[in-house]
Length: 298
Image (cartoon, rainbow, N blue to C red; front, top):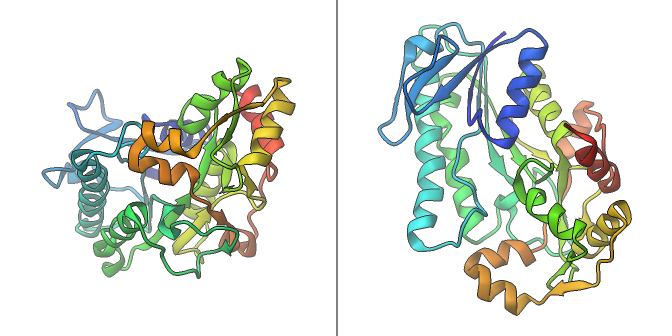
């Protein structure tokens, strides 16, 4: 297939593009600078423009672009940037896809498990209503921005991604060095659930969503066995053969991270119901497997 991808330089996007290209698909990368060649297409999410000619012939679009949630403290300006980068970008892509003479068959438009809010010990799946808080509201707007594609009859999938376990980016790119130095430990009381997924399974699940016609709407991209931060901390120490006696009190997290701390100490026990029921099989369903795979990757 000819597949357009936004966010192609990010952790997930770069791995996805490599995987698609390795299997012979033609990948068209949407970029916000002058295209370097025919494999790139210019777009400007803030102005709402896309080079439509470059999207011609694309049978699928994967939209992953968005400012990093945990990259910096959540000031009012940063929160606006987080919302705009997702809502404006998604609307731009959805309208561009819907306006093509031959629209793509499928749009996979990113979302996140933040939509459920803090679920405590309660397990949730795609049938669970959205929660409350900044991230929950952001994710609702993010998904709704794809409505023009839905209205045009394009099968639209929202992969609600959990914490991606990889050493090249995301939360674990910061955690691995700390644990290797023997400075790793639980965050807060450690009882909060963390719903994770290996980078390998994240890419495989996105590709599965592209190919599986019965999948549409929200699809949780999380491993089937979410663990508490305390359990994850212990397994990190086991795999890396390092002590995990350090701990960061919640008060310190809130002092350093501000409002972002509520996402770190909040609990999300998210299950991949739709993936599992449709027949998807995780290569690394357990956290220890996911960490080992991340450490052994390139």
